[in-house]
Amino acid sequence: EAGVTQFPSHSVIEKGQTVTLRCDPISGHDNLYWYRRVMGKEIKFLLHFVKESKQDESGMPNNRFLAERTGGTYSTLKVQPAELEDSGVYFCASSLNSGRWYEQYFGPGTRLTVT
Amino acid sequence: AQTVTQSQPEMSVQEAETVTLSCTYDTSESDYYLFWYKQPPSRQMILVIRQEAYKQQNATENRFSVNFQKAAKSFSLKISDSQLGDAAMYFCAYRSPYNTDKLIFGTGTRLQVFP
Image 1 (cartoon, chains in turn yellow, orange):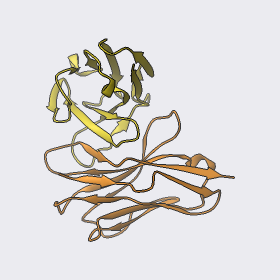
Image 2 (tube, each protein chain N blue to C red; image 1 turned 90 degrees about the horizontal axis):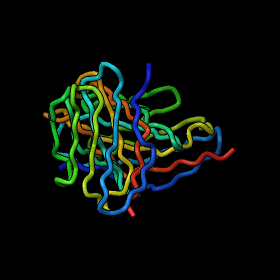
Image 3 (cartoon, chains in turn purple, yellow; image 1 turned 90 degrees about the vertical axis):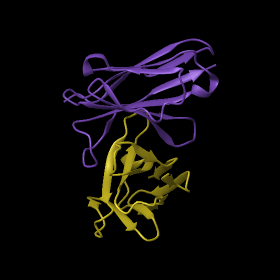
Image 4 (cartoon, rainbow over the protein chains, first blue to last red; image 1 turned 120 degrees about the horizontal axis):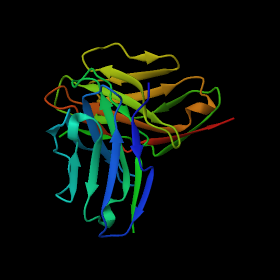
């Protein structure tokens, strides 16, 4: 069974540009999560999709971030325009069902560098 | 709001020895879940072990065990018979059982294993 995949693995962009990160969850997983780790700090929750609906987007930092999950399969996270403080590693995770017992499986992350 | 603290940015251990990674958390909830995740270099994060707060018995998974002290809000991870493959970033995480799936992470501990 393929795990959670993320693309690209690394992106370097200039301040003010746009970047789109992609996450492909494990097949059949309705729940998809985005997290972010800014250098040296804790991993922070961004949002949670159930199929194509946003269940919880309380962690989205501001309106420069737009997450979508059309069709309930893969998800994209767009940052527009990117700022220096957006640099970090963006993780995607998926789980079969929501709720405390279900394990979240993580992807390898996308390292975003904004210069 | 819940917080998770990992006070050891880096730890090291000799192969075959035992090491303990510390984690404390703050919450007003009586029921919750705690997790340890491992992220090897350039690899995805995987779940190592989890503990349900209402269970007094400490969780164990092969060489990995936890010391869960609910009153002290402490959740340390003990790795016995350390192996070179245990070298990784270790993240402690908290999940509330109420109306959210989000994981709240600490800042991580980098574990080095020396032969």
